[in-house]
Length: 437
Ligand SMILES: CSCCC(=O)C(=O)COP(=O)(O)O
Image (cartoon, rainbow, N blue to C red; front, side):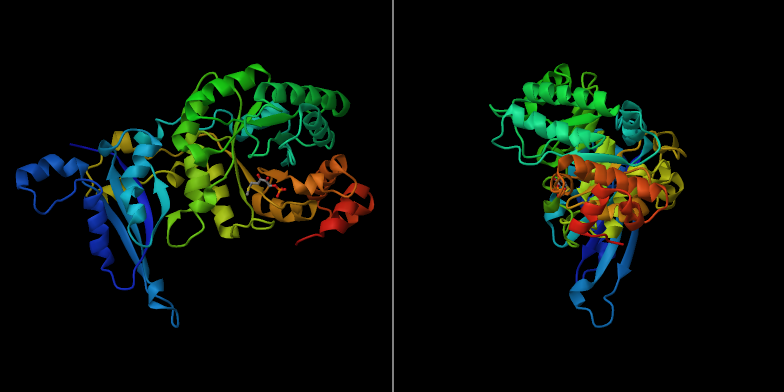
């Protein structure tokens, strides 16, 4: 019987393992359990459930490096017949027990067309977010609420207004602001949207406010409805504390009519080790886009909490790509490895049906980093800052303005330093934080 397959790529470290044997062990162990001991008749029956080794690339340690650096990149194809069309089932299949079995990291995932088509992906995507804001021709700017715990609604309103007046396109809640008696979600949305309307009258600029959707899982949809009914036009969600499936269910729900911004809280427990966990491009890229995040936040290579640049570029690539081949594995490749492929289910489509998601490199961002951000990410990026806006020597409004000026300077092809001669807010920001080139 024919089949379709999702493919996991692992980096596996071992000083002396037979990696080909290890790969076969994974392919059989995580699918049918045992193979060589099965009678022939049973093998025929189980064939469509059997994992297949697609590739094993061994890498010996460089000269002078310790033997423990020896590793192999192993690719295994898993039959879709073994799991339901949801992210928990896929993750438990390909990296459930295996994630605890030695020095092994999940470094990539590809999907069959059949699996992919179970996911609508981002409801808005980059184009949808841009249309809501009416901004098509430049990178977006986001500001983060800071010092929100223990403050009341009027303080929050004031903080929101100052951020909005600085010319930011989006404002997000701090991820540590939960449901609380001082600033409950509907009240928070109400006063912040009033401040947004006031600022819009003065600046002519639209704004999205991503309110933090928190609480027990089963009450999240009601919380989202409450926030949206109160006027929320975006949601912030701490995806990894809940799981990808919770995002997936929320984002596809018809009542959730606003973009969802995924916060990376807890991601450091998964991606930074070279030997364990899930790589950043899978965790904060492919899986978030599949689960429906319209925007994905992650640490940048330039600021305070850093992620290596190549990992940032890999996340960007998978959030922005429109090529189906970046998310799928080719039918021919599977067939060459002996897989019994159903070409209609696997399908080699040219274009990915998922909308693109905005990359949001974050943490410790100040105006002097804007040239680097735009060099690496181009126009399809959200420049995001908390301290880099509120900590501006001339205040929060000037903080937003300095960022907008830095973006304008880059788009005009002018250096920040010369642009700053005519823009005091940018000048003050550069004096405070410098420029990184
Ligand atoms: C680690 S990525 C998330 C960034 C974030 O949520 C944040 O609050 C960053 O604030 P900052 O003052 O460093 O811009």
